[in-house]
Amino acid sequence: MNKITRRNFLKTWQGVVGAFATLATIPSLYYWWWDQPHKPNNTENWIDLGKAKKIKENLWLKRPISFDIQDRWKTRTIKEMLYVFRMGKSVTILSSICPHAGCLIKTENNGFICPCHNSFFDNKGLVVEGPSPRPLDSMEWTVKKGRLYVKYEQFRSGIGTKELLG
Image (cartoon, rainbow, N blue to C red):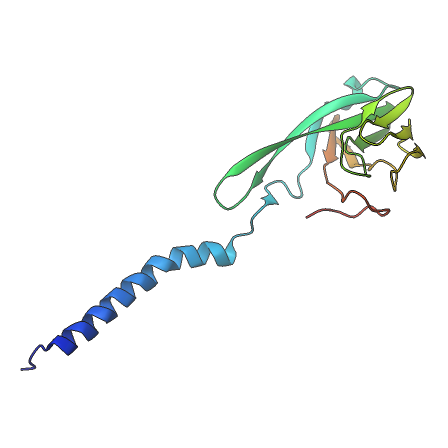
């Protein structure tokens, strides 16, 4: 029979504590390795804007949208605004975020204005004057079963090309 010495006891104790510490860190390592933070739940989903025929023609309308972003442990609801214009079966959907510095634009005098730095855009979203490096960002859209859907995307501000965020 082996005699339990202080040295043998401490070696065994270190092995047991090390095993428990390893088991305790496995869940954290799993979430750290396989989790993708800040990825929207509806990456390829389209946001419903309502019945296409109910959108008035020849008039820019503000349409609020919301979607969820799941980060590692909680879900956040993001609320944004879009401008929608319909002429017959053709639809134009513009972001309400100014491409210059990310301020919110508003309609004014048959166009759009950014109140932060006075960029003015015509009624098609093209830059008329001001520091904006590109036109307002348009969104991809589709109509399914009489309902208008938009694929909402955010683009980087302050650059001349339309570069997708995230």
